[in-house]
Image (cartoon, rainbow, N blue to C red):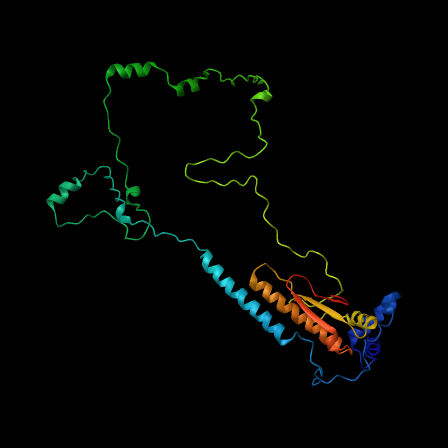
Amino acid sequence: MATCLVSLSACHHQDAIDSTLEWTQHMRGGVIAAQRPPPPGESDPYPHVGLTPTQAPEMPSPQARALLTEHLIRDRNLTYRTVAANGTLTPVIPPPPSAAATPAPTPAPAAGKPSAQPAAAASDQNPDQQDASPTLPAGTSGAIMDAAEAAPPPPPKVDAPQHTKRADAKKPSTTDSVTQGTEGPELAMPEVKESTQKAPVPESALPQIPDGPPIAPAFPGFDVPTDAHLADAPKPNYDLSDPKGTALHFMPQSDQLSSGQDGTLAKLISKTPNGPFYVRGFGNSPSLSTQDQADAVQLGLLRAQRVAKELISRNVPASAIHIRGDAFGTGARVASSP
């Protein structure tokens, strides 16, 4: 035991558990017995916590951030107005009906006790005495169990004639017939009859579909217009063609160029170093409203200006760059002709 303890504690940087685990792995062999690779950067000096980035991160321009803030403010105000117009989701529950509208049940007299006098007579005899029947307070709902706890009144006794009793005694009851084992008339299912096939409807009886719309009704003194012979409504003259030029991608709702497009700009400048360059920025308008289109045109101009600054930083003359903003489209396009 002492020899085992000395052998397990031979390494000063390993405890008994690590030594036992290593010995077990060597006994098993294979991949588990191989030495683990050192962690990356093991010999590197410890980094200083006080180091901070020396360059500012790429951010959209202040104009683009202000435009995005204005969009968020308008969306928030629109949400407030929509919620106010829709109303609350909690239904309006009316209050319970008053208990005074429902007359309180009168308790039945108990068996073996004389019945009480009518309420009218009691009120005439004692006008100052209030009704002792239990009632619910106003504005509450519930049930009064006094009438249910009282004993039911005895059924009235009716003396039947003697000849009726004799006739009932001679007539066997249903219970007696069941007890004696007699069976009643046999029940049978209704007879199923096949439905007769109807004759096919002739084509002359079917309604005819007219070739054109019905004639508009005429009213004396009124000129009723008809739209049967009117031309279709004019459609907007949209430019549905794909804009020409090299496409550049931007971050969503921002005038910041996506990374990895330096080669595209260098290729454009290598073809025509002195221009001209026609830059067309698009603002991704979400709707046809005038406000959304105006904001999209402004964002498209900001994107076109960003592309122009990138071209100027690569020694392109500013007089050779022409910018334009459009509401509908994605990113920006750079072409050598308008």
